[in-house]
Each structure stands twice: as structure tokens, then as C-alpha cells.
Image 1: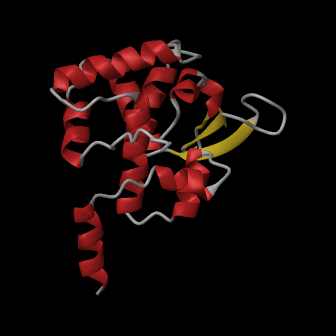
Image 2: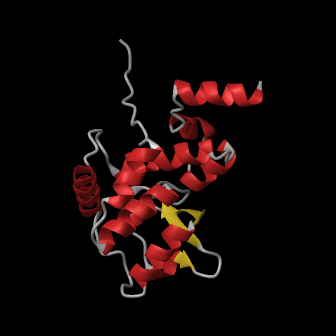
Length: 176
């Protein structure tokens, strides 16, 4: 019996831009920009507080899945892009906690992707894959990506590295 693993394809750059441009409200911008620019899990975004942001360093302190002492005890630091820092700063200037559940965030992502006319199924986890693919395309080492995504094993990070045949051929041509 073969085991089939469902692959969540990352968004293309064009679809990621369409998704960002389809945001109408502040919360939609916060959700989409943060997920695309940080690779957070939906539960990690839902759990953000004002104290999660290291303002001077422009980084997030995230308590993620797993950890040595049970659920959500694994801690990691995630750098913020200028866009993510701006939307989170604006949001947390008015709020102490994120205020949306994981399910609420999923609904926001679905609503914005429908408005953008993206036919591919888009979820917060697809945006996590999109972040990972963008990092690899920009030359970030898989070791650093592993750290930013909060994976214990490099093999887990490699699942996120869905590189298209076109990308692989283009990279090969650059080097040879």
C-alpha cells in the first residue's frame, strides 16, 4: 500500500502579490502580510501578543508547536520584514492580543483569496509554504529556514521545498 502525502503547492509570486493587493481591511493586511512574510503557523499567529514583538530588534518571539516541556514550549525568534513590522506595529498599537482564533484567520485567508480570484486552494499553511519557497529562491540556507520555521529535523523543512522544474533548471543554468 502506497502512502500518499498531500502536497501544498506554494503560491506563485504573481498570486502572492494578487493576494496582498486584494486585502481591504486592516486585519486582512495583518493576516496576509504576516503569514507571507514570517511563515508562522496559524496557531502561532493567533497566539501573538504585544509582548511577542521584540520592537528594537524587529523580530517576533514565537512559542510554537512541540517543545521539551509539552505543548507550545518551543521558543524561536523570527525576523520581521519591513511590511510585517509595519502592519504588526499598527495593529498592536491598538490591541494587546491578536484577538482572532485559528479558525477566524483561516476564514480571512479564504475570503481574501476568493476576492483575489486565485483558483488554487489557499490556506494559512499554503502561505507558510509560500514563505519557505520565497526564502529558498532568495538564497536563504535550509538550515536558517529550518530555524525560522521551528522544525526539529531538516527532513521536515525539506518537505516545504517544493521547487518547480523551471526553477531547478534556471538555477542549474546560473551555476553551470
